[in-house]
Image 1 (cartoon, rainbow, N blue to C red):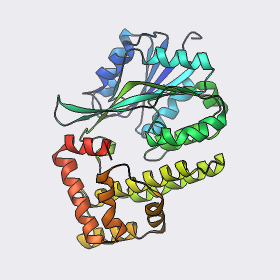
Image 2: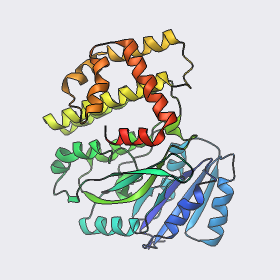
Image 3: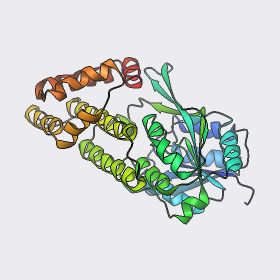
Amino acid sequence: MSDIKITAIMPVYNVENFIGKCIESLQAQTLTEWELIAVDDGSPDNSGAICDEYAKKDSRITVIHKENGGAPSARNTAIPKACGEYLYFVDSDDWAEPTMFEDMYNSAKKNNAQLVVAGFYIDTYYSDTEFYTQSQTLPTKEFKSQREFREYAHKMFDKNLLYTPWNKLFERKYIMDNNILFKTTFWDDFPFNLDVVRDVERVVLLENCYYHFMRARADSETAKYRSDMYEKREEEHGWMLDLYKYWNVNSDESREMIYRRYIERVIGCIENVTNSACTLTFREKMQEIKNMITSEQVRKALKIAVPNSLVMKLMLIPIKLKFTFLTYLEGTFISKVKSGNVKLFAKLKANR
């Protein structure tokens, strides 16, 4: 097993209509020295059986069947079993371009990298066959030092390149030596990546986009109403502030990015409260919104953040004025666009 260059780890749950394309996109990789550990996380559909069928025909594929415990549990189950020099985490409803493994691995070896970060695509489907594609990328950069990476990282956070695990190659030794695992929490990707970048020294950024993240699955986690979304966003904001304090990076650019991204996510929390799946009463919704827009963190963010677009500037007006009902109407409008015109919503979000 010593010739395995990359171990791909894939949690599997309720994706029978998508998982075949995902696995076949890995089988089509130009780099062939890989293994796939697919973890069937107690999936109620045929996803696990589909994985078994692929494993029968391809010895590089191993399937683990376990009781449902969530994606973090599934990934953590596979990590100790990995044999590759590098780890790659793939979601079972997405897919990858054929040269992804080869390009990322070659860059990792050339630079003795602990972490390789690449661009990716967001494919937002507004019908069964039609979708809007957004590319997230920055120019290729080989960081010469840990400090250089830390001072540049705000640009990568701003492009969402450091939030997700599936546009990255992780040196397995670095992950194991630092005992980095996925935390058993909702939206586990971000805290995992924060643990990785906290002390990472050797990083490479690739401008090419390889991974296709499928957005707008009606039953995907990102499409669901979350009663604790605002609390999660507050927690994430605290993590970001802590990271930059630990890094001793306090540039104007990094601070502006942190607070702009925070206020953008608060708008998402407002939409979350106003969408049709929210079970709160109208009065409770209004109180939730009032609590958000009058909070100390939001008021501070409004002073520091510099919106990138006219749309975002307009969206911040009722929040700046502390107009709760107008903010509620804004959230309701966003919800209607999000559910009724997915293509328009994707474009507005991409250019916010």
